[in-house]
Amino acid sequence: MRPMILVLSLVLGVVPLFGVVWIFVSGMIILSPFSVTMDGLFMTLILLTLSACFLLNAFWEMRDRGMLGKKKESAPTKAPTAKAS
Image: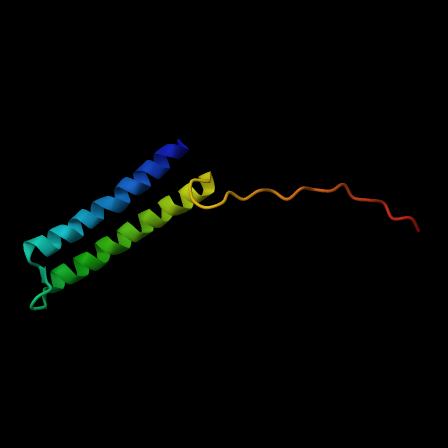
């Protein structure tokens, strides 16, 4: 079940980015000369927020699995020593 969470997070993180690309292609946001509709602006903000949430979840999942960076190693535990009084 755990690998499916990672796959779904990656897919659901990338799909909204295609929506942002579509907004630019359809002309709701134009960079030169700069022109933007309110629909395009707010839809872009919503889609980028959704994408960021899912990709952050995928990042955390990959980090917990040890796919990114160093995997946390547990510190060796020492047996408690009895103090003589």
